[in-house]
Image (tube, rainbow, N blue to C red; front, side, top):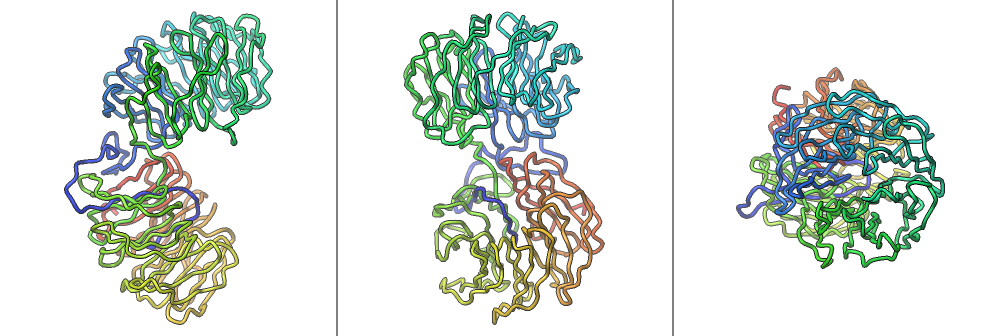
Length: 616
């Protein structure tokens, strides 16, 4: 329960005092091998309507989720990519879905069964875009490897590799008649190619920064492009002449990695994604139209086939469907809420506390019901720990410090200090240690909230703090590349251990004889807790390890890794026993259940996964 780490993200938890139905954020669809439960559906990168307008395909960090476009219900999860899915699109007849992923592949799925029909390989780096030709016989893709490729949609064979861009290609699409392809690139250009031969026909050069998206108008006469210079430009598709620049978005105070543009099906409206709203213009005149009142912005969007609605995905990863004529919100799918900072289990293992943003939520570990949301933090929450009896939760956050909650009712009991990265209960539950941004460790009376000690010595932020099993010592670690051992009663420093890089996490073994630590681009290390002699480095490929924890029996150590895996090692020899693969973004937290049979992991991909590790 004493885990912490270093990134500034978000936080969410849930607790139960009443009977609840399974949350729509819970899914057991297409779980990775060894997993029993997934909380959270991940972030969304793009969204697309089916040709009949009945379904929405949302591509993101977990896979491609298929939703009912009318009622918002989950239909399926297309799972098989081993990295973030950047884009998904339907075939013209709606029978197939094509997806592009950071795993360098393109997949073709049966839209009815969700079965993978083809995996297209050939790109040597992440694939950002994939789209069908109007007749459905070809697929065009765009990649980080600076190429555009044309594929046979039936056989999956490569028909043409188009080279010419000098930086990553972020978008590629066919013209309405299928004879041309337009591509957008990080080399600040839009290029037009022959759809059959791949010959370069035109290069459009007015953008002053990378171009993220380009699209044809429905009549094929114009091309719209949008990029990091925050301008949307309209071009004559035949001559390549710049027709107009739809002014810089004054609300865009930061650059967007995704900047899609698209015409409505009838060609009357041009839309562009923006940080604070979906921007709309009259396609013919370029006159601005009233935007939708969406304070969460629109990093992705899609027009419905009939042109009556538009679906947007905001920075909060909620899908919102709007009536275009009335500018009214029709429905919201808000099951994709961003990354998790941690997952914590109480002693009885019956619940999961998971955090993201300013919220803490508590879930039933068996049914997946959302039991309680703890609200009160006003800044990001980075850490939480249950007391040894499971009756209290201590949480640590940025703006408003340490908070103590009643784990059953969710009532806020105490608040003290500020800018905390990590918290830990003493074994007897009477004290709480907190790790702070200002380089101090503080000890608090868990009942009164009174500060008992301030431990000074770290020269940079302290990212992790842990009590020894007997409660006599405290270990702290941070970005000054040191582990410091303190006398928990007097506050005197006992020992300092030096890493060669920042340390994100530190934990004692259940018998108190060893300490495990982990840091940036560095394997986790084991130390003798009495002599402080270095014992061994845990095996594995080099990667940041954000969080480490011992199993209750002390025989294994689990780590949450930046490469999207959770790893389990033999705690005595340091041998790597198992690598759990299911997250597609950095994993921030790992936590064993009290019986050691389950492991909860929380990641930036917007998911908490509960793994069965009883075989270890």
